[in-house]
Structure formats: structure tokens, C-alpha cells
Length: 218
Ligand code: SAH
Image (cartoon, rainbow, N blue to C red):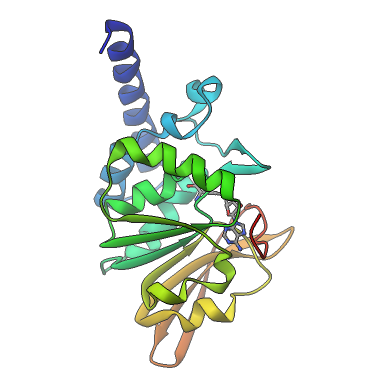
């Protein structure tokens, strides 16, 4: 490693530390979520030209008209899903560049991350490879159908907004499992669904802004 790249790595580590402190200031209290976000080099998940903004509290473009989610939203969704339990077998719908899948890998037993845009999934694969996370599996698929071959899931996290929760996702939730996704179009809100047997309980959380959940693959 050259001196230059070591300096860059240290600068990124400091920026990541500031991001985690900012998340604390924004009310994130789950230490395991904060520790996971300290582990993942977010600057490696965006174009080199955007690396300087990688630790800002903002969504950034990742190509194909998609974005890497804002750190606060990633932290909040996972914190709410985790409250009082383990994430267990986890399905992520909308892997994008793979950032959230990497964060989840430190908190879940297995992460199944699906993305409908194949070239974006290839980018995610490239981004994740050097991190050698043994419990992340990526697949190009329409996640609105879930991932029947790996169901049931203890946790389902959807990174794209829809008018309502797709029924396949509810079906693939284990009893005692939790799902979180943004619902709505112009006005979106995070909604959590908790399953107990065949009872599904919904709770509403903060306002957010996500790209739409689309169908099919491309
Ligand atoms: N989780 C990402 C956020 C990616 S943005 C992160 O860590 O930053 C949301 C992603 O959802 C986009 O890449 C989009 O292509 C994908 N998406 C939208 N509808 C989908 C569907 N039905 N199945 C799978 N992925 C979908």
C-alpha cells in the first residue's frame, strides 16, 4: 500500500467516524448499528468522483437513475427492525450498489439482497467482493415477488417505495418476523409490518423519499 492510499484510507476512516457521531446526534442509539456503519467503507460504494461526499448525510447517484440511500435512513430502518431482537435471515429488496447489504451483513445471520437492474447488481458484486462478507448472497430478480426459494425471512427491508406492501413479501415473512418499507408516492412514509401467525400489524414511522419499486428485471 502506498503512503498516499494509506492517507486516503485514514481520511475516510475519520470521515466515517464523523458520520457515526452525526448519526448519534440524529438520535440513532443502537450501538450495533453504529458499529456496523463504522465497519463499511461507504466511499467504496460510490463513484470515485463522489468519494468526498460519501460520508455526508445525503443520498448520492449510483447510475441507472438510482441512488445510494442516505446514511440516517439506513440506520433508522435497521434500528427499528432490530429493536429487541436479532435480524436473523434477512431479505433486502433493492440492493443498488450493495451498501446496505454490507451493513446488514454485520447484523444478520444471512443476507439475501436482490436487485432488478442487472448491471447495477454487477456493480454491487464488485463493491462487495473485497469486503469478503461470507453471509451475503446477491441475485438479479424482481424483489416485489420476494425470493421464494430462500423464504421464510425474519426480516425484510425494502429500499424502494410502493403504494402498498406486496402480498408475496408478507407471505414470505416468518411468524415473529418484521418487514419495513416506504409506502406512498409523492408523500412517503416508512411502514413496519410485524407478523404473528396470520396477524399482520402495521406501524407508521418517519417521512422519507425513495425511488419507486418497479416490476420485472432489466
Ligand atoms: N439499498 C441501496 C439503495 C438502492 S436504491 C443502498 O444501500 O444504497 C433502490 C434500488 O431498488 C434501486 O437500485 C432499484 O433498481 C431497486 N429496485 C426497485 N424496484 C425493485 C424490485 N422490484 N426488485 C428489486 N430491486 C428493485
